[in-house]
Amino acid sequence: MSTNLKATLGVLAAALTVVLLVVATKLTDPEPASAAQVVRADSHRLSTAADDRMTIVEFLDFECEACLAAYPGVERLRAEYGDRITYVVRYFPIASHPNAYTAAHAAEAAARQGRFEEMYVKLFDNQNVWGHQAESQAAVFEGYATELGLDLAKFKADVASADVADRVESDAEDGISLGVSGTPTFFVNGQRYSGQPTYEALKATVDKALNQ
Image 1: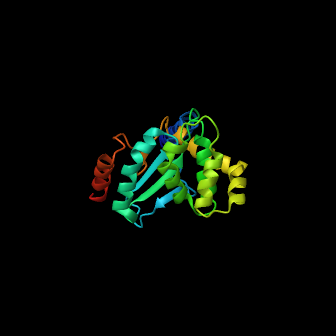
Image 2: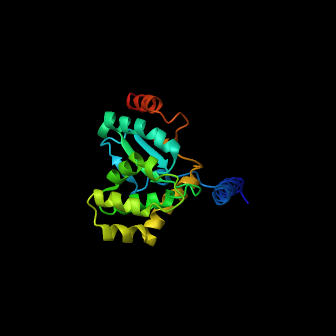
Image 3: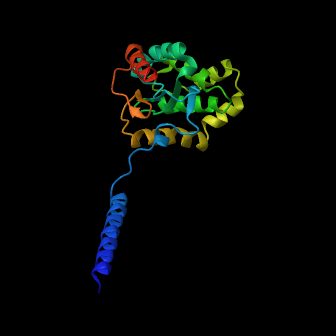
């Protein structure tokens, strides 16, 4: 065997080893969380920025007191920045909250009639009325649906449907895969936000990104 042939075979063997190592690593190491897990095509957007420079995603529970505490600051931020930012809401109902899933189903059922944002506002504006009640608040949410002018029969059918339940659970599963364990949890441009969920702190983060 010639020296050149031996060298060529050696190079090929080394390259094959590298390829095998890469494949083995991909098979054994977990993939990092993809951007699609933070925002999906069907995620509910309260505003959409044309330039995609700033996207805030909030995993929330409508019965969560901390989410309610963050809500006024979030609304102030949305009012100030409007369509300069994309603001995305995703469901993460906490099982220990007795009506968290029912509230999320009500919001998703409203979304099926194009009224997600209105129900989002209703649920937070009235959390002190319906929240942390042991009995089901389904009738209260049906009242909100009526106030919003929704088709009540469709709303009730959607709330009880497996499709709506799956949609809510899909958001929650994404949250778990991203390391969400409580609410509210924010992601800013795909990265988990570690600051305080206040208007001032979120505004500072938004301004920094928009001014880069």
